[in-house]
Image 1 (cartoon, rainbow, N blue to C red):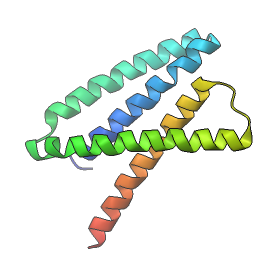
Image 2 (cartoon, helix red, strand yellow; image 1 turned 90 degrees about the horizontal axis):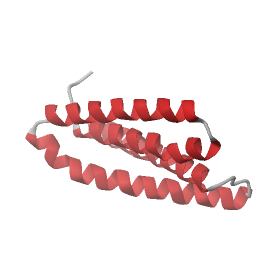
Image 3 (cartoon, rainbow, N blue to C red; image 1 turned 135 degrees about the horizontal axis):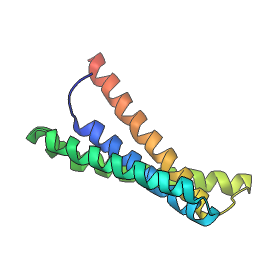
Length: 124
């Protein structure tokens, strides 16, 4: 495993977004224990993200804004994909589920795009 990278930090921040996107589901469903655990886990991920940021070199920090834009685009795309899926399946149980599942799909898209880009650059 390598050291800290901007790509890893963007994935870590995406994980934090996904974790925070689940909070409305737990809040609405009355799952206080799960809500508490997710809040604690989110705090740990946020601390790790800050530590990761501090370990990045200047070049990696310059790449981060582009990666965060890509992450934002992927999160919006994931939300759109899941909205389309639920529109076709007609099984949406609430906006909380849409936000949670959309964020998860977006993070998967982001991580797969990072992996695919790395595979392509390694093949050259």
